[in-house]
Image 1 (cartoon, rainbow, N blue to C red):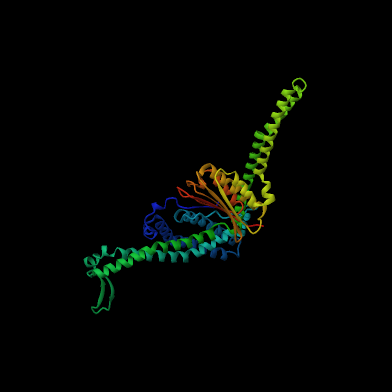
Image 2: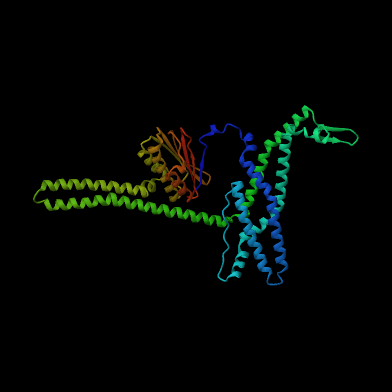
Length: 438
């Protein structure tokens, strides 16, 4: 499910991000991850190269193939640790790669599955690249961290030099003949601390930049392939569609059972009573027929409402603009509707846009406390955007209840996105983005 939220409490972050970053836990977690890259890289690189060399040398015998398979299996085990490290320190959620597909046949089937698995070879490539990348990140992180914090705090520890080294400060230049330049005066101390402050303020962004590349490397080589990710996404979307269809069927069944069906049963009973008394008491029969007539009209209205909830005829016949205007007319809050589409999208897209607006306007009428609301629909490139706004008290959250969360899941099943902008005190702006399919 894809949703986006704005921070409803911006006043709680008064300190600028540039000043917060050097002391935030995120920076130090990511720094620890970069420092651990070197030992992890050494372990993975040595294991991968040693096992590959040994297996290649033994290929003239039967043992070479199992050794290479063990290399791939070991690299997958290292990948498990690396994904755990990325989740813990980088907060990077990396999905598990596709498992090894085993065919019947015991050990050799497992070996064959390892060799056929693209994920296994990506893990081996990761172990190969981890060492040079780990050396680079360890060096940059260590040198930058040491230099920036040492320069920033230099005025606090300069006393070490005259006390233990017999010189006034850090020596910048010396020719061995008595000519030397030291960082010892007040101006030099202030300049050193100022440069250290600038480097310290830039240091978190260097760490985060390296960590971002690190997260891309882990996701690209240790996560599932794009094809597998797409298959999983389609399976999840199919589950959402199936659950939604089942819920709709249960809703229709309850509406028929508790509404129209009950009224038709009462209608049949009243007509039966009227038939029995029509000769003996015509007036009573007329009253029963009139009551039955009222039940018929009520049942017809309920069936119309039910049919509108399944798929309104006005949407099929006249399109999204008139259909949304009809929805807006039923809302207890005055709603303005503006639809600017060059053509009609696919029926499935029209339907989900219609029901999205219906549910959002229903929320506006029940929960928002708004005086006015608006609906806008337009096309942008290959996407259709549906936006519902209101001037209510705000505070809408996808996680606050099943309504917005379910709507976001339904949109996600159609490759759509739900964006919620609802700060406390309002106004609320909810945007649904759908693919344009004509």
